[in-house]
Amino acid sequence: MSSFPLISALTLLPFAGGIAVLLLGRAGRSAARLTAVVFAMASLALTLLLWRGFQPGLPGMQFQEWHAWAPALGLQYHVGLDGLSLLMLAVSSIVVLMSIAASWSNLKQGPAYFSLLLFLETGLFGTYTALNFLHWFLYWELSLIPAFFLIRIWGGSGRARAATQFFVYTMVGSITLLLAFLAIFLASGSFDFIELTQMAQTGQLASAIAQNLHWHQWDSGHITMVLFGGAFLGFAVKTPVVPFHGWLGSAYAEAAPETTMVLTGALSKMGVYGFLRILLPIFPEQMWRARTILLWLAVATIVLPALTAWAQTDLKRMFAYSSINHLGYCILGIVAVAGSTGADASFVSAKAAALTGVMLQMFSHGITAATLFWFLTLLERRSGGLLGLDDFGGLRRAMPVFSGLMGIALFASLGLPGLIGFPGEFLIFKGVFPLSWWAAALALIGLLMTAVFLLTVLQRVFSGPLRERWAGLQDLTLAERCMLAPGVALMFVVGLYPQLISGMLHGTVMQLVAQVRF
Image (cartoon, rainbow, N blue to C red; front, top):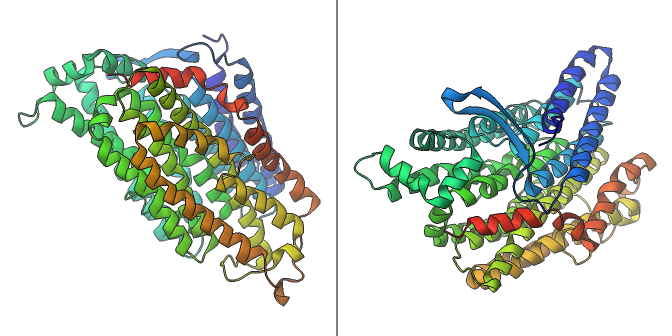
């Protein structure tokens, strides 16, 4: 246990930054903007400090902090991190800093906007480190509030409806999640994720549910399945899993691209994190029993959004549905692991590969999706608000640097070998094929359609004759190139040396593999 509360300091740092930005707002937008950058960079620096001190070979949680809060209510301040948590802290701190940088020259986004971004970062950090459900749920909901206002205030013409959809969908999921865990607490007397995982592995949780919950003369198996369904809905909406994705297209399209960078790069990972942190270790048997339905949902989440993205003519909506498609691979890997009970070496290796791929995919998608929406931000400003697929053509002649760098991001999203998207997708399919060959085979359709619509963007936006109205478009400035360079460089670094990430995940992955043996 660390003598200094690094995790608490990290969580409170962006919150304090949000307050400071509001207080300095009277001094002008420049002071508020600079303050936001300083606190976001400090958060990234502290995350890197945790990364440096993390020991991937040790089992369990590290840097843990535990304090009694309201023991009678089962509420304890318990935080810690493993490889998964550390990875999510890293992608969140990077994406938030990228979003602030993308908003640097947008005069519409003042102190309130930067403050809400930092408050959202606090919610993300708390969600990825809290280990007590009530404490964790506070951060889960805290992230909802600033995201709602970021969409509602700085979005497009349909922002009111989009923000309302986002709020209603996620709130319904949160309610079912809360009810499920309240029932678990009534049965087990605990809200602690670590303790509940141990109880689930030893069978004590099932016994406690059978002994203390009596609903309509149902047996404990039916009751536990209902509780699993409530928790699943909360995470499925947040991810989002088809058919619980109705809010995403409008929210991503109507929000300012700088806001969408955070929504897709960091906020959407909360749902996948819930699958890994809560559903997989606490409800392994229920996931196994529901494996066929869950596999079909995973395949639908991969294939249908890819087809929908291909049919779009608005670039923001196209990349929005592409985001669902990429997260669908994560759900496929998780469900395939949960739906397999083999314990021999080949099955263990396949499960480890799939889960490692899932975590790499979460990181790579966060970076590539945020970068792509950053390019859309720059294009929207230069084109006077136009982002239609048919509005452009031949931009590589007017904006060669912009076109080249965005092309790298598109190929990274496509999963081109040597770039950041390839290792995760490769490991997911490598692990899933031995576990569920038919689901992996069907998911390849989504991979094909992803290539089709991303190459369509390259062809119709950057190739062909240059329209006269775009001949004078300004290419990336030196400042913009410098701000985009770290993200683009990271695409090559992780693509060529994925061990930089996967090496930190080995202990966490093997622990998760062990937990699905019921």
